[in-house]
Every structure is written in structure tokens, then in C-alpha cells.
Image (cartoon, rainbow, N blue to C red; front, side, top):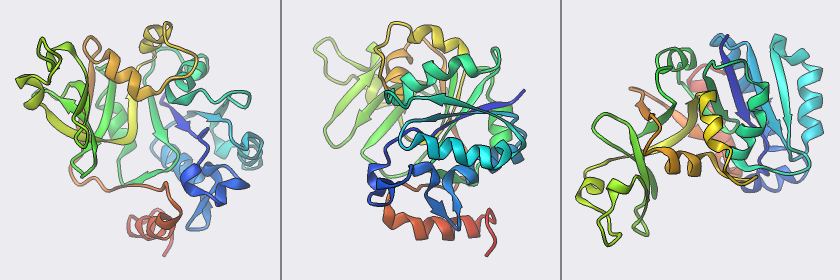
Length: 256
């Protein structure tokens, strides 16, 4: 069974004032909520079970899913109403809702793309995690070796580096190995093996999934995937909503 998780618990602070009265997941693009766009893309790709985590205006999301008959899918709610657990803590809490050891495709609710989610899921199941990445301009990059395995993270604006010990000299400065790493930007979609949950047991109640990947990439098989022809957009700000509608029309995900 193909299964997925949608990160929908965030506060949506970049989408204020819209998110003062609704969750980010229900902000509309092209007349439909972001959540619906992601759910339908997953359904069309063949996913049967979807876990949605909720916190900010959680009842609105739960009511919306119920009102739409769960879109004919097995949609399960991971309720973080009492405490927002961040992305890593959210995955750990939701893990009891996953089916066995099958990989879980994790998708940010505010990401829209032309990615073939079925192909991504089916072709990358041999690793502990696979992160969709791209060559775009940003300040924060993930670092990959020649085999496209993640070894760390860097902020090129500050020079900060985190990750595998091999990225550092004895004095803590970035090594030649670090400088030869390929820098790629995370695209908000990743494949997660439930076997990684056991590594999360020593983490605090709240932690980010990227912090987890950075800490574990020295021993876990965390791969990067660059998709040729990928078009992707983060619908994280009010000023991007009109652009997002144009994006969806161009990719024929909504009617023109």
C-alpha cells in the first residue's frame, strides 16, 4: 500500500493575515484549498492512506476532510492540537498511523509541483530516506557526495556547516571534503522509511525533520533526488498566491 503524510500543522505565519482565521492548509489557490490540491495529486498517483497532522485551527481541517468524505481515501489525523511538535516530532507521533514498514511520502501542504509522485515513491524505496532537491538559489543548502548521499547542511550566508564529521578539519573548520560536496536545495517532498523512527527515540518532544536528517546522515542512507524538468513552488507568502494559481493552470492541475 502506498502511503503518505501531509505536513499541515504549521501556523502559517508568512500567510498572515489570512491565517488569523484559518489554517494554512485551507488557504485557497485557484478556488480550492492547498490541502485539496495535495490530496488529489496523491490520490491520482495511487496513494491509498494519507496521514495529516493538524494543530492551528485543527478542527477546520478535520471538518473539511470529513465533509469531503476523506476524498475516498483512508485519511488519518495526527492531532497536535495541544502542542505543535515541529516536523520531526510530528513524524514520530504520526508513525503509529503508518502501515507497517512501507515507505511514507512526506509532502509539505504549501508545496505545489509537477513531480510524478508515483515514480518518486516507487523508484526510491531502497534508502532510509530520499529528499527531492533542486539547483535553485537560496542561502541554505544540503550537502551531497558524488553518490548523491546527504552528508550535511550549510548556510552560505554565514558559512555555518553541520553534518558528518568528515566535513570538518580537526580545528572545526570546513574540510576539503566539505568544499567538494554538491550543494542542493530541499524541495519540501521526501520519502521516509518508518525504520528511522527508532532513531528518533532519544530526540526531544519537538524537533525538526531536517535537523534529524542532518544529525543522522553520517550513518543513515539519506539520498538526494534531482528530477529533470522539475517545476516546484513554495506557496508560503500572500504575494505568491496569484503566482501559484498561474503555476497550477500552466501545469493543468486546475482549469484555466
